[in-house]
Amino acid sequence: MNIPVNIPMNLKDPSVLTGRAYYDGQWRDGDGGRNFEVTNPASGKVIAEVADCSAEQAAAAIDAAYAAQKSWAGLLASERCAMVAELGRLMVEHADDLGAILCAEMGKPFAEARGEIIYGASFLEWYAEEGKRIYGDTIPAAAKGKRIIVLKQPVGVVASITPWNFPNAMITRKIAPALAAGCTVVARPAKLTPLSATAIAVLAERAGFPAGVFNLITSSSASSIGKEFCSNPKVRKLTFTGSTEVGRVLMRQCSDDIKKLSLELGGNAPFIVFDDADLDAAVEGAMGSKFRNAGQTCVCANRIYVQKGVYEAFAEKMVMRMQSLHVGDGFQEGINIGPLVDMDAVEKVEEHVNDAVEKGAEVMFGGFRHTLGGSFYTPTLLTGVTQAMKVAKEETFGPVAPLFSFDTEEEAVQMANDTEFGLASYFYSRDIGRCLRVAEALEYGIVGVNDGLPSTAVAPFGGVKQSGLGREGSKYGIEDFLEVKYLSLGGI
Ligand SMILES: NC(=O)c1ccc[n+]([C@@H]2O[C@H](COP(=O)([O-])OP(=O)(O)OC[C@H]3O[C@@H](n4cnc5c(N)ncnc54)[C@H](O)[C@@H]3O)[C@@H](O)[C@H]2O)c1
Ligand SMILES: O=C[C@H](O)CS(=O)(=O)O
Image (tube, rainbow, N blue to C red; front, side, top):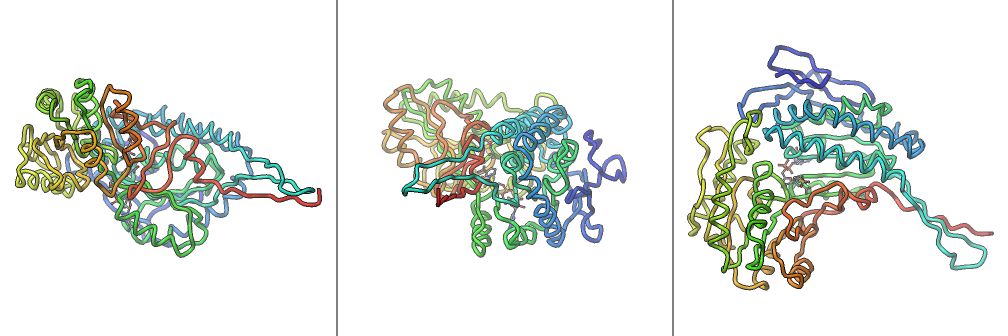
């Protein structure tokens, strides 16, 4: 595996690299030289051995971030933001290399992986500008001889924990606003995908970030590093992207010293097709939302509700379009559905399909593990799905499109909202009154109206209910890395 980006890794042999952690401006091995392995999901082959850092090393990284934070915040916003912009530029310059690394460690088809690099860079580009527009307030005083000034100041040291499914963009969506605001960061990527994060550290070093400003802890021990992040008083904010289950654990762990929290958690997105929809547009939207990253995104359509009058036509059109889904190794030309990240993911998808069929659903397309074996799964369309099935209640996180039918708008909204999650939702209709009624009634942080792919750096991404706290992207995304300070000036 020839990793093109100059990641400081000791080549043990042409197939296995050794990655290191990066903190206080130095590349570091794991405690006692310990490493953990990274495998390519398509082949199952080991492609790298990466520094397996300890909680003590995480504490050292936090110390470095703490030591660097005041001088980092003391730079002009334009000086900080110039480095944030340079990191984004370097990511775009190396998009092919970074895409290859991402495809190798996560399995995402190369074109999609490269697209994630551009998406990830867009957060750096966006916050390189937003960071120069952090405005405070003056407020008319409530008493004579006084003045009121409101300042916004960086929170301080930020700890970041991210998932495997977007190993580049979930990191930049956090570090871009944090760094632009004047915070310093200690980031821990998922054990399955440390190489993309390592490449970001390589480019951050090249972009000129001072020692201690951006720090990377690679580790196989999520909980011990997480406990250090949550308990260390020098960490003033934890930003987490991952499952609701883990988010709940981290929220409890951060409560002892009341750390600021951003939580981007699980989803269970409804996708509603009304009988007045542009059916072809609805099919395209469903295909894009459902099968992106082989269904492994937090905003994938998890439940597809189709009004009875167009149900058969929609199902037939979906079957036709699914013929264009080609499963295989993400490095091969023409492949748009890569392997699932691991066998646990396959087993969960299989459990959901089998449960639905046992409870009366029918398989119109796929419904089985792919003949390639390993963690490849055939894109699947189920009809006759009901709210009693697991696919209605749990995030499938795989290439399974379950079609539910409904009669009325009220019934569709009720079923769509019948979940503890509230991240993304979608519906297709050409009736403006219906669009406004349904958009207002859906209990979600994101509503795609005739749009299956809403994600962008310029808009606020995040959920309600058990899908999380806070927003990432847009002008809102930097507020979570700022404290509001009220100055009351007397004796004027
Ligand atoms: N809302 C969003 O923006 C968003 C984006 C991507 C993924 N997700 C969600 O993430 C989940 C899939 O990702 P995943 O499988 O990596 O999630 P996960 O919660 O299992 O792991 C996420 C990260 O947390 C770490 N982690 C796990 N247990 C921990 C602990 N006890 N203490 C500290 N860290 C711990 C993992 O190593 C990983 O780095 C799905 O539920 C998906 O919906 C949400
Ligand atoms: O699943 C993780 C990402 O948040 C999905 S998106 O690319 O931001 O839509």
